[in-house]
Image (cartoon, rainbow, N blue to C red):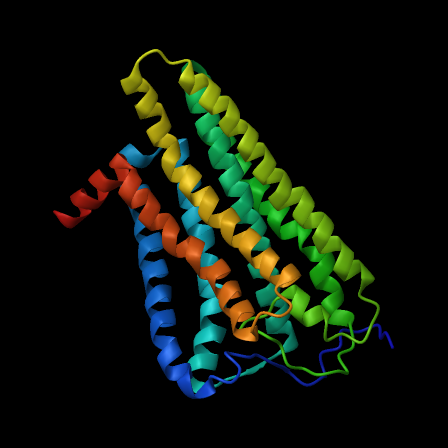
Length: 310
């Protein structure tokens, strides 16, 4: 039955850690905590360096700062509930908090995809039309692109998340992760969830899939341009600026595809595999991105050395 007011009075949802491994939760929490701290330190350091070092005040690094900020926020959104479940078995979560967490997690996934697309545009302009780079990617345009990416992520998730507040939940209240996901919550609703099933599929096609396609084609054009460069040294230099971005794109999309495959075709895989894969999806890109950029970008290496030598 649908009521006019949000169905807040119902019992809270119950988060789930690793079923059957509850006794090992304190031990499982150690690598999780280590990864969370690494993500916070790595992305926090990147943000600090880009803010502090005038040599990094360029569009490429502004987009990198947006990526680090997104990674940091998604990590800080999942970390409290995951650590509470693993450390003290605090499983209850109120509906409002749960829906908000799902909203932020899913929105930021789309934001991350959009930032990777913006970064490929930056590399495309830098390599294919280098003389116009500064006139095309002005500071105001970078800000507009950033705002556009944020708005696309946060507005596109309003339609599927909003109905969750009005759905009645008369079935089990047990969620299958230690954080809230839209697809998890909607399955518990005693209502017609057709829209909530269809909308995310369309959204994924128009965001992740389309972004990946545009990134792929922009790199085809970049490679064509690079191969036209006569000098081997210049060619290597041009490609080198793309390697970090390509690595981050691969890390992000391989985890997205991996998670999709596990959900679609891993019906017989142990439940732990499903759960572990969803943690990989949320922790691997934020963990890897700062490492990739620190290893592959000379400017950031110099900035790190300058920070350490103070």
